[in-house]
Amino acid sequence: MPATSDINENSPLYMTYLWVTAAGMPIRRIGLRLGADADRKRSDMTMAISNELSYPRPLTADEHDLIEAMLGAVRSGVSRYMGQLEAAEVVGGCGCGCPSIDLVVASAVADAGPSPVLLADAESPEGVPVGVILWARGGCLSGLEVHPWDGTDVIRLPRPETLRNLRTAS
Image 1 (cartoon, one colour):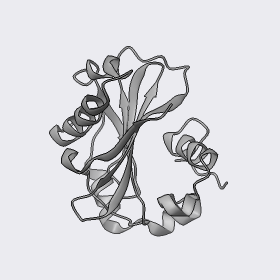
Image 2 (cartoon, rainbow, N blue to C red):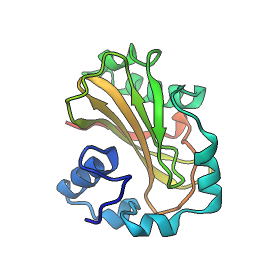
Image 3 (cartoon, helix red, strand yellow):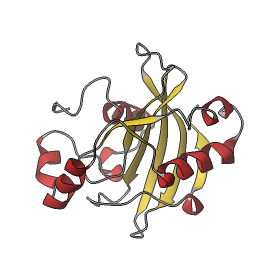
Image 4 (cartoon, rainbow, N blue to C red):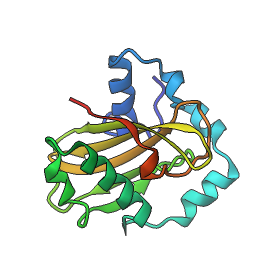
């Protein structure tokens, strides 16, 4: 796997790569772009979007609503994360054009590795089928990943009402 400054053994993208390949799903299917290929796929619009965001910042209403809908739909085994929504801060995002975000909660344990908590399918406002993964690290929310199944470069956050096939990762 090619390495870039954006992808390392602790990044959610790398962990998604490991999780997806372990599940036997081809990487091309979920549209992950690794290494130099990621740089070729970035558009000027994507870079403009990335450059206008400042971190840390609070969750947007749409980000909050999507995470809350995911947690509320499952209930079993994820209730501890619901109380973390108000304290969660967005500390980074993806530069590929997707609305994925990195989160931090004040009580997070830095030494723990990230792991997927909830998985879902949804549809972006552009009508693109997407996968949604809610990540945790050390018992605290650590990220929301949204990846297009067809490799589309720029998508927006799906609306909560489009969530389907919601399931826990374990």
